[in-house]
Length: 258
Image (cartoon, rainbow, N blue to C red; front, side, top):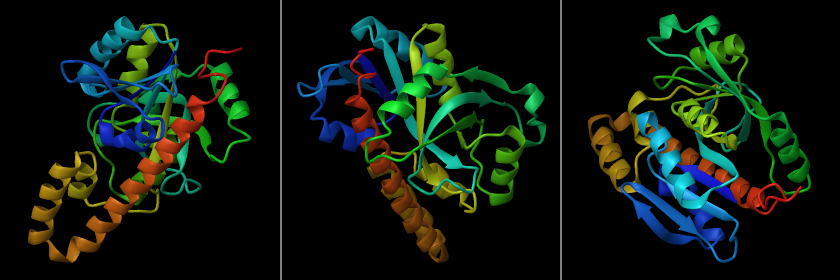
């Protein structure tokens, strides 16, 4: 069985809708979705960021015993070749901590994805209508909003994208000895500066985003265009991520076939 995990239902809402998934069970904040049309896939939503990741992975395993796990989420591009909505399959996941001035390659912890899994995704998705890149991903303790910093991260750590939670999920899944892959859709490009408030807001559910964005726009009317642009980019990234997941769910790898 393939397990797809995400932190918010809206993040993979398109995948759940296309695959005709419905909520089948829940435990605390963790919700499980299954589908009669794709019976070999379970989606788990909630609790896959921060310190909850290991506990959520444990609950998922006890309920469904998956053989393969895909962590679905979003990232900032740190390479010029990745557009908004571009999908990155992370073949290497690194993490650094502390304030930005202390980030060094020598301090980064790394987890390598199984190269056989990455190669199978390349092979089995090659004939689909989904385009994606394979590259390294870096988890940071805070959002990066300035283009020069993004460029520096991509160059220094030799990664394609940066996020806020990928390493924690990878670490939890590795400890559980599951095959896994991280998939990240790009919300903002390396060339794009972001407003700190906007970059944070895009992670929230719709109702909360509307309230926070409206409050920020009232106090900063000249920033309305940036807010609208970021919201549009978030929608593009969600669509790309969901379509990639749907196509992946139809592969022999997802079905557990050799």
